[in-house]
Length: 280
Ligand code: NAD
Figure 1 (tube, protein in one colour):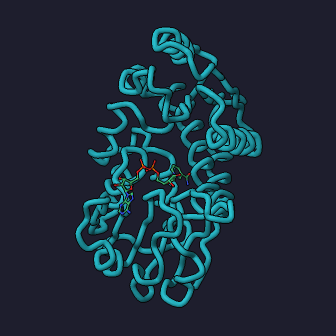
Figure 2 (cartoon, rainbow, N blue to C red):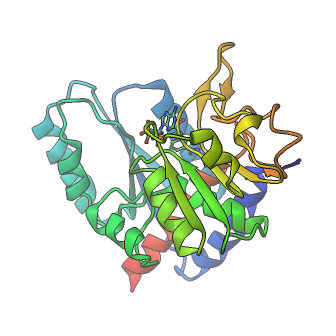
C-alpha cells in the first residue's frame, strides 16, 4: 500500500500560492483566526494554521474571546473583524459555546472573507458547483490529495462516511463535481460495511477512532482518512485502522501526516484567492 503524504500535497499547493502572491504587487494577505475559549483542539489547530501561513509567507493574527462572552458582545466583536479592511480572510474555530448563535454568525460573516465556507452563500456555491465560492478547507483538502497523486475520480464509486456541514456534505458535492458516483453514509446507514467495501474511493469523516478496518475496505481501494481522534493510548489516530488495511487498500492517507497538513495549505490558498478577488 502506498502512503499518501499530506506534506507533499501541501508543498504543491505552496508553489501555486507563491505564484498567486506575485499577482498582489507586494501586498501580504492577512488571516484572522477567531477563537472563543481555550479548547486544546482549537489551540492546536490555530498553532498549525499560523505556522502554515508563516511558512507560506502570509500573515495571521488571533482574536481570542473568553468562553463566557455573551452572544451580543461576540456578535459586535465579530462584526468589527468582518468589517476591518486590514483583514483579508477569517477562520472561525467551531463549535462556539452554547450561548452564541452559530447560525447567526454563519450569516454574519462576509462571504468574501469566509475562507472555510460557513456562510449560506458559499455553501450554495459549493452545492451549485460554482468555483468562485469557498468550500470548507478540509473537504477541498481531500480533493487536493486525490488530484496531487493523480488518482482518478470521474466515474469512480466514492463512499463518504459522515454527513456534517463542514466535511461530509460539502465533500460529497465536490466529488460529484469531479464526476464520481457518491454515496453518503451516516449513523443510520443500514449496510455500512458493504457500502464502504464496494467503494473505489473511501473517505472517512465520522470522528470515530479506527472504526474502519480491513473489513470495510475493498481490494485496491483508495482510502482518505479525515478523522482526527485520540486512541486508547492517548495517541492521535484517524477513523481508519491504518495497520489493518495495509494488504487491502492500494493507497491511504495516514493520521497524523495526511489530510490535516493539506487543510491548512488550502486555507492559505483560499486566503490568497480572497485577496485577489478583493483586489478586482
Ligand atoms: P461530526 O461529528 O460533525 O460528524 C460526524 C459524521 O459522521 C456525522 O454525520 C455522523 O452521522 C457520522 N458518523 C458518526 N459515527 C458514525 C458511525 N459509527 N457510522 C457511520 N457514520 C457515523 O464531525 P466532523 O466535524 O464532520 O468531523 C469528522 C472528523 O473529521 C472528526 O474526527 C474531526 O476531528 C475530523 N476533522 C478533521 C479535519 C482535518 O483538517 N483533517 C477538519 C475537520 C474535522
